[in-house]
Amino acid sequence: MLLLAFVLELLPTKWVPATWGVVDLPEFASEILSGFVTGLVLVIVDTLCIARFGATPGKWLYRIQVITFEGQRPDYGKSFTRAAAVFVAGLGFGLRLFSALFSIIAWWRVHTRRLTYWDDLCMTEARQMPRSLWRLVGAVACTVGIMCVWTEVQMGIFDDLLDPPAESVPFVEETPEPQDPRVGQYLLQNGESRA
Figure 1 (cartoon, rainbow, N blue to C red):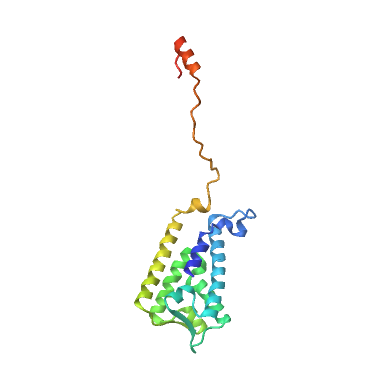
Figure 2 (figure 1 turned 90 degrees about the vertical axis):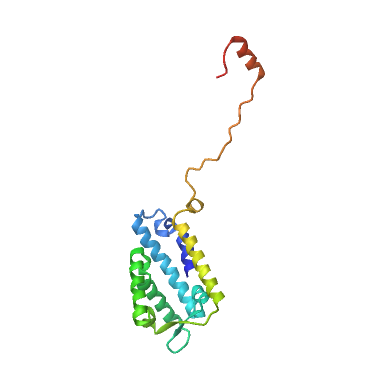
């Protein structure tokens, strides 16, 4: 899910259909729309992954399985409800301010009740399966690598690759004009300089 969010974050908000010249949105409205579009895609992918495999790619990497209280993999209805609740109560609708606040609330709930809101709502739990040390080291390395690239993208280093400048002028090397030896001789004879 982190990788999918990273790819979606690369897309400039002007590529969202509502901003294709139909409506000129201010920056905050563009961010809201982008957050909802990203959230919609994440909810769909999360639903499909949890219902089909019991884990998203990140959960699989860390060997975490989402199961019902009866020990079964959640069906599509529970998976969708859980994914939508994660988007609303865990990610704060994809808005940066709410996302930070809601993440703190979710962390507090896990540490006090040992269960997130969305797992309590859907009667599911995220169960940690045994894993080797090498798998844990690889999972942490992948996560740190994705976060480093994401940070670089957020800082705008790759902006020129995704959105080249509007006025790009090709580089033209200046070549000196060919010198006619007769012009130089004429100037020397009449006492004039070339400059």
